[in-house]
Length: 306
Image 1 (cartoon, rainbow, N blue to C red):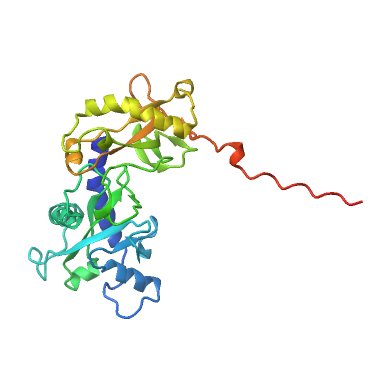
Image 2: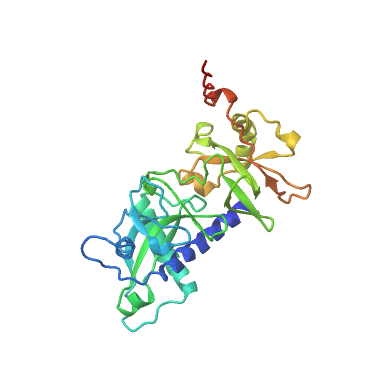
């Protein structure tokens, strides 16, 4: 199921970014300083390789450049010209054709930018910003290829921190991340107090358990994770007996292609399943509350006069 979700996210994720670009109605080349939101977004849209971009999920027109050390939505890898295939009078490709163009033209660009293979099941997928209809009419045939992280549904882009080439591509999430349950499938990150499928309670680095040069089969990984995840969960939950609250530990595993791309870390997750294997909705976090001794003592009551 995880493989299906990740690959669907990679496919739909490219569309998510491409469709955002049609909302941009400003020119892509702006001279001088960016003193308005539109100017700043226009400059960001035409950024050079290595630039990190961010925008609100519900307001992509507010795109802006940010340092890659800060959370960001998209990292520009390189600009690719497709004018040889689409002349001056050619109509723009249909949306479904754009997706294939991005896959064909941006995947290699993304790997060259990373200076290593792109993990097909990892946290990064290739995407692109395409010319708007107006830019296309004006002769712009530039595909702005980049790297992004797509949510399980493929409908959202998740923030990442740090330059992609310097990051581990393992598809792991911060402990405390909960994933929604939508029609029986794993959904996007949600508040842990609401209904969810899984809660990430920790991360395990399998390169400390196996030789990175030799891929361990998924069954071998699971046999080791049975011992590695419980201590992580105990620390996160404060020793909660998961069985008593009808929850179980579910570690992820790593595909061979991911291992060969240098991805060695996996999530340890808590969730629940019905006897038939279907995911059961969970409410509330299993994270332990901080001990009372860590809370600041109350201020002493003022003494009464007299």
